[in-house]
Image (cartoon, rainbow, N blue to C red; front, side, top):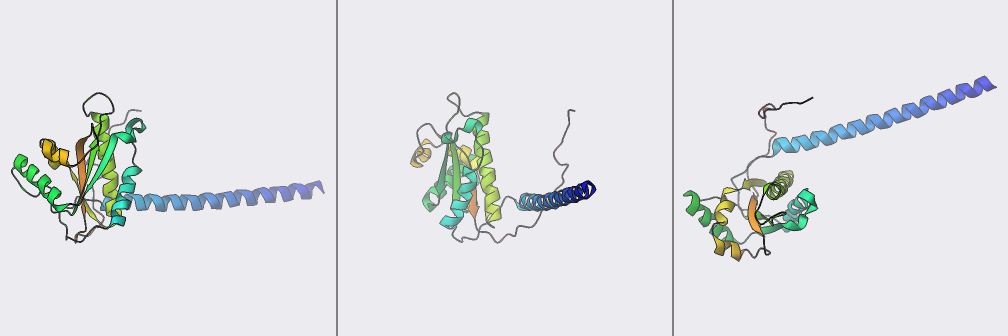
Length: 211
């Protein structure tokens, strides 16, 4: 009788292990699929400088802004970041003109119908520093990924924002909260350019290990 009970217990244990193994295998498969979708998105993202004029919907903008809200912030100081969504054609034109004066070339926003500006208030001290620029850049990158996922074109904008900061009247017209300065931004728009997976050299950035 004891022998039968031992055999039964052993069989039960085998079933438990087999079940756990199946669950782990399913979990591994799900993780692999998730990683594949993530890296496919990274491989498709690219800077887009051509837009077809189709209106970007409020729902699309909301999805892109959600990505910014999900991005990390140094010391959790999310209140030190401000987002301005610019769709007004006259304001977009003024930003373009400001950049043209500085860089002697036009079209800094590439005719995009939407420009999402990230402004920062210094976390420490009176001037923007590494953490502030990093917060803005991370938010912009996450929004670019969201735009790609939606099939929208986007492009990181730094130069036009640097020029914008030289025009105090134009900055004032944006109605930023006190203490905030424009940092960087993202153009967004529908495009006829397709998003194919890019063939990327995975050794293009040097890597060293300290073990």
